[in-house]
Image 1 (cartoon, protein in one colour):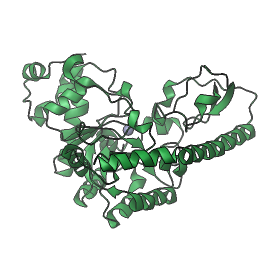
Image 2: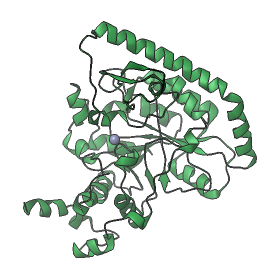
Image 3: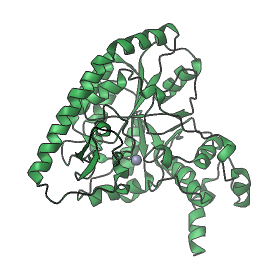
Image 4: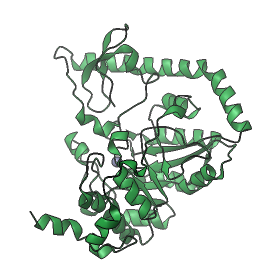
Length: 380
Ligand SMILES: [Zn+2]
């Protein structure tokens, strides 16, 4: 998560704990509480942010402050939800009457009771959220979400569930719960970590080399009816990458490898990190050209009925139930999230020409694709 470290209001500064690194930094009080602002950066991109930590703060002080801020956040979030209730109800009635009830898509990472971190939640937290979702939403597949968006008409609260990365502990209780309850789920996998059994660098950095899924477990999920999606080969930030070889390998070759593992077509792709700055017009255009059904971001926002059904905006499956419930009760700010523009106007790579030059069929030639990076790397 990130907060603007520059205080531009009269509310004064305060020390705020970062969920990712537990350090403290100075931030504007008005911008610090998440009930006011979006979580504009996901936790695992936190390392890009500077966090000056005052040396005088002891661990006890840090924990105390963290607890106070957390409780205050929950109280303010609930007050915000209740205070805006009449406006939300009015908006909801209007959306229903117009058959334009937007769809939500949640993304989770890891459900486990040990080694807690900002991209994890406990099983009991997860089960509580699932039960609440069952009571309040149609929980549908990404395909059904897209169908409702495309149909131009939806009167029912609709939500889809996805997971990113590929953490082994998800198979212990979370995925079995969803399968038992017949809840559709799309599971996005980073192939290199799975194939090489390599923990994610951000977990290693945190001192906990958390176990990742295996090729066998991914295959078993696919056979059990879980939709497997692509999440690149090495989990890079695709935003600043403009080398077509790298983009192609991370997006298309990695997807073909995943299809080889599960023996099925992969239809969906999720950008790592998923904020605006982590998305790429060139990657979007490549995904379109290769016939993917949908592409997921992770910067928040619901999906308007009658709007774009290819780019699916997702919301963080927040371990804080109060905050999660606030977002999913049609917080008006969710609807104003600025959609990423992936139109061709800012495309820099001519994929048709590039693929022809590299002897790649636009439709499919996996045996050639997996050799692209090797060929490049031998060039030095
Ligand atoms: Zn990821």
